[in-house]
Length: 430
Image (cartoon, rainbow, N blue to C red):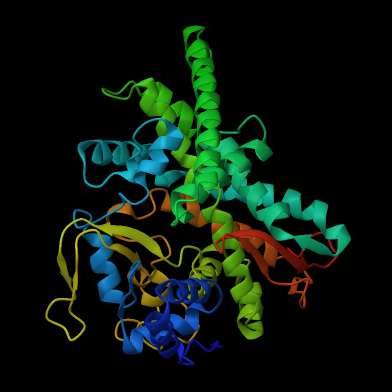
């Protein structure tokens, strides 16, 4: 199938080494800029020449086996780097900020039960209905701002109707999730403004959920039925240790893990498909079969996952890639960035990584994470992402627009804010 060049243009390491000798902060700035604008070329060069890239500020891990090693050893490479910020925002400990603790194991298992994989068909139907309503409203203009006009509204609609977290309104819930996640996962430099905004948003979200929980409790006392959503399932569960505080914090985590990442993945997948006209045509032809179509989405996300780097903190000295030529001692206290976006192009594991090839093994897909903190609701997130993209591709006339209008605009170099697409004016392709 059609391929887009993923090779290394070279030169990054020479420029980095020269800058490091003059001014470590300027060298750090170069790497940060490359990770936002030229990450494919940078990662390709690092895989070839410096697969464990040690800098004064952090260490980047780029090979498949090494990324898996980092993500699989949660007692060595922990999430403690961002856990306290999530705790501060939510007013209590949250499982995503914990590694292999009793609370983490118990509550992760609890939420996996609540997010029943058997709900996938129901969630796909809901997603398709939401997407078609939004697209019907947009198609008359011949253009679609896909982030705010489709991707985020679908995710917020699923939050409301499946998770049971509608927010006071979709715009407020969207504002809360962006503020909390921006601090929890993107605030590597500890910006106090992001931290303060996160705590304000978290306080408002938790208070809103407490009010919603009180309403559910009152309905049960009055003998009224609760809806069949995740929030109501938790309220009805009456399991030991599942206190109201734990229900509220775990439900706060549902939109945090979904409202930013799902639309981000949708935007990346659509852009990658549109950048490959022959592949795009094949995907459109396959769009009548959701399971077959989803394979195009998963391969597109391999080329550009939403989370390209996953942060971890090294808790004790560790020899990474022991017994290989790239063996490296990672000292305790090192901030480590595991790069799934690079690992999925490691030719030692992924055959012909530059080719767009359907049906690659599931374990080659690292865009849902791996190990202890792999995506908790992957069965739900997968159908929401795949079905939203499918409904979009069923619309005739979908196309990238040329610069400066076209292309994904991102805040903080991560979160998609705008993606203007051309769209036909017919209401439905099929």
